[in-house]
Every structure is written in structure tokens, then in C-alpha cells.
Image (cartoon, rainbow over all chains, first blue to last red; front, side, top):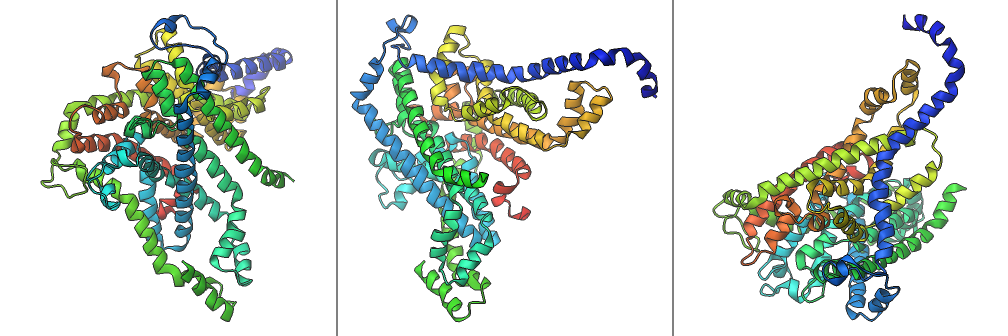
Length: 311
Length: 292
């Protein structure tokens, strides 16, 4: 009905419409993108640029350089190079990322994904649910559970056969690595079991007909096919682990001494406990730099596959 | 495990045609192995649950005796309730903001030709890689200058922005999968952009919106560093910071009460995860054996 009435009225407008309409469309499109763009500029891009500047200043939380601070050039950098705690912290960060993230999480996650293919459904889904539950829990809960677990008389101490010792003060780095692996294994398990499902069964069967055993097939057929998934898994785990703060800070506050102060924790301590906001920012920038270098290394490893996929 | 190799290779040499036999020989060993790994993963969870119901809980795994909900009672009295309400505020406000903003942007990015769209999407992807640790100090400094510190609202805006890049990607892909014909038809009928979004697009992408909202909620709920630094007001303390303060309070660690507090704080996240995993297919169906 309305369509019958409309044409005579809009006949005139139709000529002017396309330009007007596209203008309105552009305005509407921009207006709808604006809130997210504003948030991203205000809370990502400006802080990132600001961080690059603050990293080269002597800004403090309190005291004489809190209000008026100066650009100090490479002073923070020089301080970092001569700061043994910083280098110790870099070492701890690498131990945490490699030991807990790359080795423990990936190996356990891959083992669970491979086992999941060959065990019965009830075992797979119940064990899978437990592992995923550990991953879903808030980080602070994980920190509390493992804090209690490793106290003198705690369950972990019993498992290790040293019920009287407080593992968080004797082997703190080991405990936080185990806690992080416990929490993060589910991610690798989920990602890698999805990757395993995409490995074509025919290839594996062909290798089997050739007489290749399970382990040989795993290392020469399955894992090479899964290389892209493994690399993405490593990349995401590395980026997640390298900037992890809550778990370690809640368990140990970086202690005892500096024995678990990985870079994010060291940054927090310098910035908000020793008031060195400028130096803390410089540490955060280093952390991002390390993450970026590792990411580029992974992506370079991935490049052959990406090229194959394109051609 | 070398036995597995021998056993698996054995029958194949004799009868290479029986390919599918490989499952049976190592089966029991592998099942037992997986159950053992599962039990090791279960132990910490088991301690948490048992300790939360044990009024005499310590750090050792033991059955509660007597079984009671006293710890929950005490934890709530020690401030768990107020802290969880604060977490609800932070997570709720940031979820509403992030999801609304990302749906609008996702709609436009999926449907319109926009100049520099490719570059914009790459930039967003790049932003997801920037850690909170880098943004923390500059954001703190900006908040000092704007006098935004110690405010629940501004803290939740920061939490929202942390989820926006990922949410935009998720929702853009979701909207991209919905055929555009309905919208074109509605536009020809003269429907406005807003009514197209609310009456056609949103009903079709409700699963995507829910997944995005739930993930944002879970992230904001567990957020620790941002509220710790940006909002030092004791009455605004969310659950994550509350548990930390309770842990590091002077004197004897109250294992039972802390366990109860942690359980109370974790249950909402677990429920939301279970809801969202119904919509997340593929890689996340590992735990849900029922779905196959």
C-alpha cells in the first residue's frame, strides 16, 4: 500500500539522493565507529606513546620528581644495564616463559591431546573437564590454592617428600612454574587437540601401512603437519606468560628477596613500591621488546607455511 | 611406552591390512596414564573445596570434620560479599560498554566499505598484543592528571577498553557470516540504521554477542592489577584484590575462610564459562563429551 503512494512524492528527491545518501551513510558509519576508536586511542594508543616517552624520564610516584620531571635520555637505559636485579629478573622471566610456558604447558597439553585421541570417551571428557576447570578459575584463586599447596605441611610438600619445608621459600621459582603450568595446560590441550583433529587420517594410515611405529609417525608425520598450530600455540603462550603478573605477585610478591621477581613484578615493585615510575616504564618497554622479538621469531618460523597456503 | 611401539608394530608386520587394530593394545595403559594426570590436576581443586567446608582447615588435604559452612559465613562477614558486589559492578559496566561499542564497530566493519579498513583491522590485532603491564603506568599518570583515580566507573572503562580489540574482531567475523539480504530488504523498506541493527542484525548474532560479553565479563571479573593500581579506595575493592589482601594480612593465614572466599569468587566465572562453551564450537568442545 505504502509503495503505491510513495513514488510520486519521492520522484524529485531521487535525482539528488545518491550523493546525499552516501554522505549520510558515511556520517553514520563514522559515528558508529567513533566510540570504539575513541576508547582505543584514549586507552591504548595514547598510553603506548606516553609510555615510550615516560620510559626516558625520571618521573616518580612521590617526591621532587612527581610533579616536575625531566627527559633524561638514556639514563634509565644505563641504569638498567648496570642493575644486577634487572638482569636477574630477565633471567627469571626467561625461565618462567620457557620452563613453565613453552616446555611444561606445551608438552603436557600435547600429551593430553594425544592421549585424548586414544582413551575412552568417559576418561577423556572427565579429565578434560578437570584440566579446563583449572584454566577457567580466576588467577587469584589459582594463586591462593598453590600458595596453600606449597606451604610447610602443604600437599605439594608431601608429594615431594619434604613435608616440613616451605617450598615457596626453598624452591619458589619451581612452585610458581608448576602453578602456571597447572593453570595454562588446558589452553594448549584445547588448541592442539583441535589441531590434531585437522590432521588428515589418510596420511597417518599410509605411514602405518609402510610399517612406521606410533612414535615415528608422531614425529615424522603428525607433528610436522601440525607445525602451524604448534607455532601459534607457542606464540600465544609466550605472549601470555611473559606479561603475567597476578599469579606470581599474589603468591610471593616477587620474593623471597627477588627470587621470583619476573619483569612485570619487578616493574610493579620499582614503580609502585620504590616510586620509580620512569624506570618502571623503561622496564615495561623492555618487556614488550622481548615479547616482540620472540613473536617475530615465531612468525618467521611460520612463514613457509603461510606462503604455501597462499600459492 | 616403548612396549606400545613394539605391540603396535607387531600385528602390522604379520597382517598389514588390519590397520584399525592399533587402538586396542595400549588402551588400558593410556587410560590409566590419563586418569593419573587427571588426578594430579584434581588435587588442588579438591583441597580448595574440602578446605572451604572445613572449619579447622589447614594447608593439608583432609576431609572436613565437622562438615560446615562456617567458613562461608565468616568470609562473607569479612567483606567477601561487598567485594564480590564491586567485582560485579566493574565486570558488569565494562561488559556493557565493551560489547555495545564493539557491536557497533563490528557491524560497520563487516558491512561498509571504509577507507583504511585493512590497516585499521591490523592495528586492532596489534593492540591485542600490547600487555597491561605497558599501559599501566601511563594510564595511572593520565588518571592522576585527570583526577580519575579511585573511581569504580573510570576503572571499569579501562577494563572495557582492554577487551574492545578482541571483541571487535569476534563480532566483525560473526556479523560477516550473517547474509546481508535481510538488511538490504529492510533498508529498501526505509528502515533506519539503528532499527536495522536492533531488529535484524542483533537477533541474528545473539550467540556472538553473548560469547563476546561473557569473555569480557570473565576477564574483567578476574582483573587484579588494574583495580589494584587505579582504585585504592577500600570500599571499591573487588574480589580479586580482596582475596590478595586477605592472603597477605598479618597473622595466621585463614585457609578455610580464604578457600570459601575463593570458591564464592570463582563460581560465577565457572557458570558463565559453561554457558559460553555451549556456543563455542570446534576447539572448545574437548570438555563437553556429550556434544561429540
